[in-house]
Amino acid sequence: MAKLFLVPTPIGNLGDITIRAIETLKSAHVILAEDTRVAKKLLDHYEISTPVKSYHQHNEHKITEEIAIRISSGETTALISDAGTPGISDPGFLLVRKCMEEGIPVECLPGPTALIPAIVASGIPSDRFYFEGFLPHKKGRKSRLTAILELDRTVVLYESTHRILKLLKEVNEMAPLRQISVSRELTKKFEEHARGTAQELLHHFEQGSTKGEFVVVIQGVKG
Image (cartoon, rainbow, N blue to C red):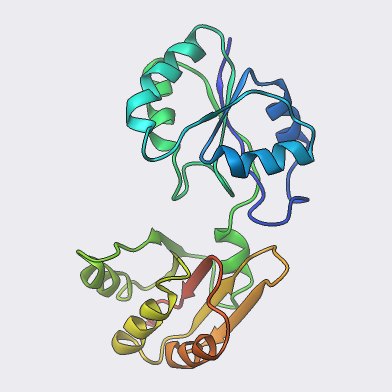
């Protein structure tokens, strides 16, 4: 019976992909990709010739049912995002839910994600943590950040190059003494891990580079 495979892809270094992931992408009837241009680089590198179709946040609501029907008809499908594991701050949830509703088998392969390397390398307790993903850009941002800064466990956020300084300023205003670790460009050439208070990290990144994708690990409230 055909199924949906969720296939993690490298978050930077093309070598960070499993043999099983490559085999799955090669054997699928079709690959759904968040950005076909990004996918092409990976697929060409590993000589994967499986047909690729777009599946992203702007079309997933329209084509999810159609994809489920095709899988039910025998078309084994692999879903990939631009980087990391599909469904984690990336498209995937709607399709997984639809497949489950229709009784279509769903299998997620283990593999790359920015979340785990960042928290493990942070030096901040990782036995209990809360993953927020991306904060709202505007509406509800302050109240959401206030709420998670009150948690008694480590908090992990994703942030973009355009808002990392804004986030550090906000945390500095709300929790100036809290320890933070910021990981930038994980697995890539200019990978960086910076640790300290929000004020110290704000100074660091104002003087340095804010290019790339960021994972921010914030210490929880101490009891």
